Image 1: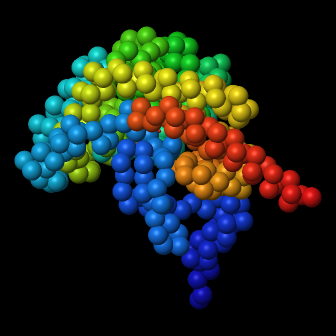
Image 2: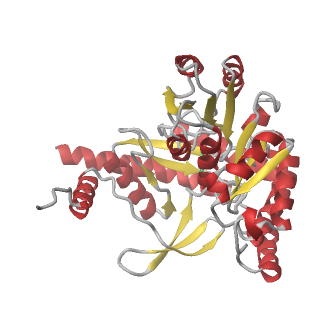
Image 3: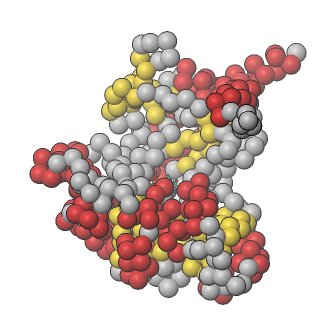
Length: 407
Ligand SMILES: *Cc1c(COP(=O)(O)O)cnc(C)c1O
């Protein structure tokens, strides 16, 4: 008898055609060389060109710092390039331990645990703490890894409208027979705004839910000594018992740390499947991260410069009537409307020598396509000025093309 089964390849091809029709296909651009924010990239038709990058997450400009690069080289010479096993077998090195201690000290918490990446860490936290009967309440704009973590946990996932504390409370009250976590980005990755952490902490406390804050875009950037959004909100360990800090963004390295109450963190180290069943990060990478953390803690001028450039960008963008969002962080999205407009804007910016990736659904909601501009401490004020002027020209150019299309 013939088997009636959908053909996987045919389905994949149909899905791709659909993405083509919606201008939602995604392509990678290849970096050949990088010097700070200057990137030499490969062009589609062969050849190369240099673009000024305004879409990286290297907020403090640490990824090519000589001390960070030196730590990596030195670490590789001493320890090799791989850890050779998972942490619980024989892959746990002194370098990992030192990095965890440095992060715990910086964030002023008892314990911190190193993961391969922020994505993996979020899977680990939700999978290790929540089971079928439990509840995970999340902001609608939370990062995909937090949604995927709740799916992996198999728990009940309830989402509330963006930054709506009443909505969070309603969702917490809707399920009262399971353990609960309230989960939020500290700084929202595609909008750049801050979660109402103080009020969320109150909601979590009254509902006996564990608050977990993802500080991916806040660590190094916000708060006293760059300790993040939880520290900026003045929350203590009882109010915010657990948070994620990634090492691949402001710290310019790779990996992530979950930090907080000792028993919670220890539970992850012993039971979280995305921790237990994977190879430990290379110790040399941990040493590079350690060097970056030390710089991020000490060099306040990087944060000050960053804030100055953010304000400069917003002030000049307002003069040009660019459509921004209410963000005071280095994430400064410029809304474009539909996917085609966002792609046209990105292409026009590339023509002008700037690299800003177009962010489209499903990463953001339908009709919310945008150029997600990120400013860093490695940019110059004149570069920010030139960026804003080019954005205004690109917007006018794309709007003009659309109008002539209609006419
Ligand atoms: C980037 C990001 C992550 C994932 O971190 P990686 O280290 O890149 O895997 C998690 N959460 C948020 C909010 C992020 O922006």
